Length: 329
Image (tube, rainbow, N blue to C red; front, side, top):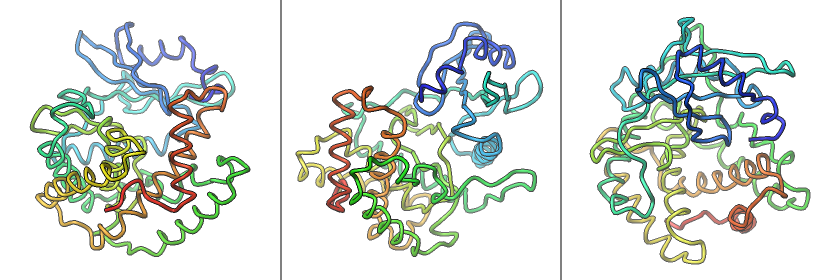
């Protein structure tokens, strides 16, 4: 979390959100990168409390996210339930000392267990189930219509992180140039109901729990209107990045082929694969590199970067410089 936001998020604010959702005082922080995420309890049952600063999301954006989650849940997709506060609101807003705001939402805790990338269950059965779940989400979202009282979620190209001149270091002029070229290639891709819609954008293995049969997806904070192929590319991107070191490219490519074969087979159980998906995949793998490069520069000051983050930035920057995706399919 940016330091300017950290100083605003006080124990008093957290306590007030706990009161609004009638939660117990004992909390466990699960994350604080873009949102503050806590495991909390009500009557000894676990829930997830997410608190978002207005510099990251507007109230309208969060309301649209919650509406879509509710729609997917009604379509029998395994996503969280959203709960109301004592004020019968799914979204609560509290002011910070500087006049900005924090927004709170309460979700059910997903069923199942976290998936470790080197676990024995990180296998083709999981990849197939993962793909089927994403296919179900895409099939459902084709039917989604934004209610009149809700402002639609942003398009992919409205992402603040694409203000690359603001986030990329001054010496990265070539990377900026290559990013502009890639964005131009993406802008001419076909946009229709079978290729483009409201999607999660971040269904990597850290954003679901698995119970052996069902992938239970959470963290819809980044949902936007995007190509379905991008949503397929993200699980592949992170699985490769976390499982196999960057200096083992041949092994990365072999794993990618196995992963995407099982994933695509599962996806097709629920939805037709988008036209041209395999040809377009490298574009979206490159886009994820660009967004990660931007978010690390935005969120983590050079003095706060550990060895792992520094090495990752170097690896990603080199791929952008060479116009290479993380894997060759």
